[in-house]
Image (cartoon, rainbow, N blue to C red; front, side, top):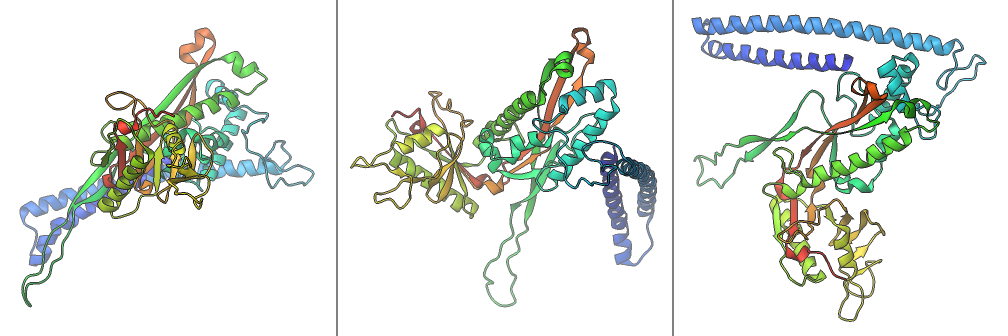
Length: 461
C-alpha cells in the first residue's frame, strides 16, 4: 500500500509540473510584449491557477497518508526490535543468553522446515499471524536481494506475495537453459502502474552540409521524433491442490510445484521473446524491418551457411552501424555444423580454434542448450525453443544474429496467490502464479538479422 501511494504521489507531482508549464505558457506572450493579460489569457490563467491549487490539495492529502503509513511502519519495526531484544525464539532473533545471530538462513529455502505454500494458505485463508510474518520477512529478503539485480517487486497489488528467492534464482539468476535467448537480452525492471512502456526515438535526424560561400545560409534540417511502444503482457498459470496435501504432507510442496512453475515460466518467457507476434510485443523472429537473409538450397552445406551468417552480420554493421554480439540457433543446426567435414574428411568445427586445418567455427562447451562455441568472432548459443516447424514445408528452423543490448526485456518479479472460495466444496485450494513482462524489440530493427529458407530444413547426418 505504501509503495502504491508513493507512486500516486509521484504521478500527482508530474501532473502539477505539467500544469505549471501550461500556466507559464499563458504568460509567455504578455511578458514578451510587456503588457497585461487580455480577457482570454486572464481566463486561461485563472483556470490553470485553480487547477494547480486543486492538485496541491490532492498532493497534501496523499503526503499525509504516506506519512501516517511510514509512522506505522516505524512503530512495527521498533516493536520487532524489542521482540527480538527480549528473549523471543526464532531463527532471526537474538537469544537471551547474549549470543547474537549475525547471519541467518532464508525464511523459505529448499530443505527448510517451513513451507511457503503452507504459509500462503494459512495467511490468506486462515489469517495466521505467524504465517503472515514469515511471508513478509521473505518479501523483505527478496527485495533486498533484488536491489542488486535488474528486477523489482513493485508490480502487483492486493494480497499476493513474492515467491522465495531460491525460485527466482531458479529461473533468472542462473543462465537457465530453458530461457537461453531471454537471458541474453538487456534486462530492466518493469515499472509498476502501467500497461505500456513508450520510449522516444528520432524518426529523422538533423543534417549538415558544406556552406556554399561565406555569409550564406547553412544547412537547416529539423529532426522529427516519434516513440516505440511495448505492451505489458501477463504470463500466468494455476494449480489446484488438496488442502490435505498442503497442510498434512511431510514434504514441502514448494520444492515440487514452485520448481515446475519456475521451469515452465522460463520457457514461456523465452518463447515470448522469440516468437510473439502481437502488436507491441514482437518477438525477435517477427520484428518489422529486421534484416532478412534468405538461404534457399535443396542440398544445404556448412560452407554456404557460413556465408549467410557473414551476410547477417554485415547487415547489422551496415544498418545499425554497431556490431552484433550474439548468434542464436537451434541445437540441430549446431549439430549440422559439427558434422561438417572438409575434403580430407576433417571436421570444420573443432574444439580448438588454432587447430591445423581450416576452422568454420570453434567448440566452446558441450551443451544441448546455452553457450556452445563461437563463429565469426561471435558467441553461439543454442536454444531448443527456436521453432523447427517454419517455412512452406513446416520443417525449417531459424538463425538469429543480433545486437542483444539493443533489445530490452522488462520483467517484474513473479507473484503467487491462493483461493479457496470456488474450491471449498472439494476441500481444495487454487494456487495462482503470474508475472508481467514487456519486450522492446523494435527500437532498432536493424540490430536483428534472421536467416531463413529451405537451407534450414531438417538436417541429415
